[in-house]
Amino acid sequence: MNDFNDSPISISTQALERMPYYLQHLKQLQKEGITVIASPAIAADLSLNEVQVRKDLAAVSTSKGKPKSGFIISDLIYNMENILGYHNVKDAVLVGAGYLGSALLSYKGFDSCGMHIVAAFDIDDTIVGTELCGKKVLPVNKLSGMCRRMNIHIGIIAVPEDQAQTVCDQLVAGGILAVWNFAPVHLNTPETIMVKNENMAASLAILSKHLQEKIKQS
Ligand SMILES: NC(=O)c1ccc[n+]([C@@H]2O[C@H](COP(=O)([O-])OP(=O)(O)OC[C@H]3O[C@@H](n4cnc5c(N)ncnc54)[C@H](O)[C@@H]3O)[C@@H](O)[C@H]2O)c1
Image (cartoon, rainbow, N blue to C red; front, top):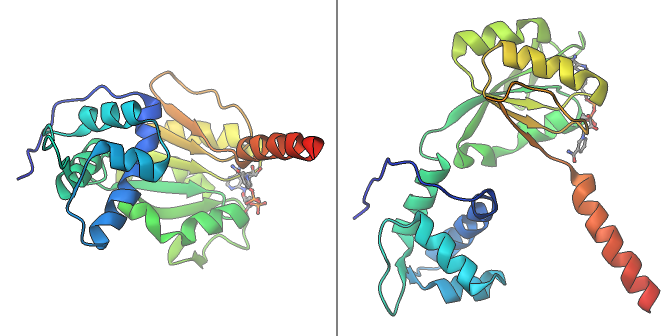
């Protein structure tokens, strides 16, 4: 039985970032008909540190797990999704319906991660009024008002970097509490707003450095 626990749990950002990897793996195991798993097995499957995995699972699980066989996978999935807020899908708006914005709009996996994009906003008259991937593209001057009216709390920024701060200010004026920023620029926001920056260049830098070292060695 799932033990629904509403009390706030303190969990590190790093542990939170590992949760989607655990979830994906646990769901795959479930598809394969596996019902119970121990933390060392998860650590081995995902090439993670065993102690770290044990701590992560202990932080999210409402049960201790069976001494030998481990955790009931369905309960663990429930607990993780509950902590990540996936059971309570939150509406989001996307600003900038260009190449990246269109790709984000077309991705069907966000709903199962607790986020539903309700509409896109753009400044370009040739895109405004059209539909992209089933989502209306609205004029950006309606952004703040619509966020307020619909009580939307997540804003996704996919505009050129020189426009990102203006768009961010409009989102904040609309009552947004969390910003997922894809523009390569630092955004200034009030302390109560969480900004999560996404930058593929950061991952590429690590790959590039690794390649450079390997090529030097060969
Ligand atoms: N995080 C990453 O790894 C990553 C990857 C690709 C692109 N990006 C960034 O994402 C952003 C978008 O890139 P793209 O290739 O989709 O560009 P794009 O030019 O195809 O799209 C940008 C869209 O924003 C719209 N726009 C411009 N100013 C606006 C404003 N004030 N309000 C509303 N809409 C506005 C434009 O009309 C256009 O439709 C850029 O900042 C780019 O650097 C980040």
